[in-house]
Picture (cartoon, rainbow, N blue to C red):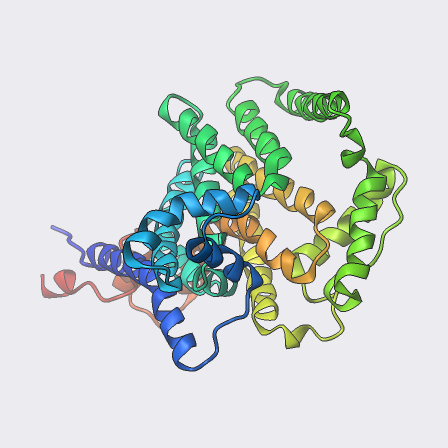
Length: 393
């Protein structure tokens, strides 16, 4: 009887990897402070000041952060490491929930892909930087993953999860409200078994945009959604932050102008600080994250092309919608690193699938490995290794 040992070893490795994901922010925080290399993130001072001086802001994101982190901060005393510890827990939850959401839509979601996904998650430069400081990125990614998981299932308790996750996403980053609505619409239409899905999606998107502008018009806020207003915000940022920290200026008088600039803005957004800064390598973490993001995007696209599944198409459509929407409104070079994190999070599972598929093909074509080595990998039972049970029989 054929038995294998690879599957169990890979599962154990995945468990250890997720434990390391939860501990990594604390370990990195300790190392950074011991070596006097802690990153200077202005937001962290704002968030920590609330626990020292009391809640003194009307900012919804800061108030929500305070409500979530205050119990531990007040119990153990105002200390950044308390928030970092909670960030580690949020990171592990984010990784787990994101994997569950992707597993519902993909065929190639075995334990090897899970391990590669965990490794990519652990090596993610932007996550390492922002989860090792008392800022909102870890909590935001967790709420985003809950929203994606709930929206992808869309029934019963999952629908409630989508609503609550989406609400928390908007509380932490109000600019994601249109994105949340559009992504939820994509998942809803994808579950409809009809040949009219694409027209329904287009009509629903147009109707949602029109309804949003109508509501904003009733509130005398419709100017905030105009191309001119968005262009003004971007161009004013050049004066506020300086040309070396902001994308180039734009001249928009209609949505046609926005569409024309969208491809360029999308590349800037995904690859920032490259293409937008004269000295990108001075922003070490941002530059590393851009390289990492490029590899993840490439691997994710390769996985999408090779799988050719309708459900995978739904996932990638949501990724594209989030990326394009945020690229249009984003203007800050470093801000792009933080705001593209939901995009990269959604691309990590398909990227892991693409990497696993590539490794499997290399092993399959290799003449150096034994037949039992290739069979164990191809059967999805774990790490490459000699089947000792088969050899002894």
